[in-house]
Length: 147
Image (cartoon, rainbow, N blue to C red):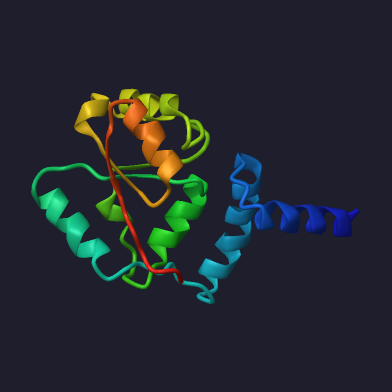
């Protein structure tokens, strides 16, 4: 049975599936790795200065990721830039809805008490960008080198 579960998890990861259950399982696995110091969340060097600048300008910053909220907090709490969790006003994951569905962006806007047209969503996934635009959210597609 254990082998079948492991094989299923590998299969889902190979397909880059973004189901809530898989992301939660990955979050539990990451927690142990981060807590022992074996893993640190890699942050591009321009990210923290940009977020600090936005916050100084009075903007709120939220994370919406296919990774679970727990995994997000681990990544940003144990990052190569140190614990940067204080830079974020909140976290969203697939529990709010899939990132490729426009209704998810409307739910986030309602949750934070903001009109969708006052939100800028940054992504590197065109399908997510399209869904956010359908919800009247501003979008910028970010291009990063493959790691």
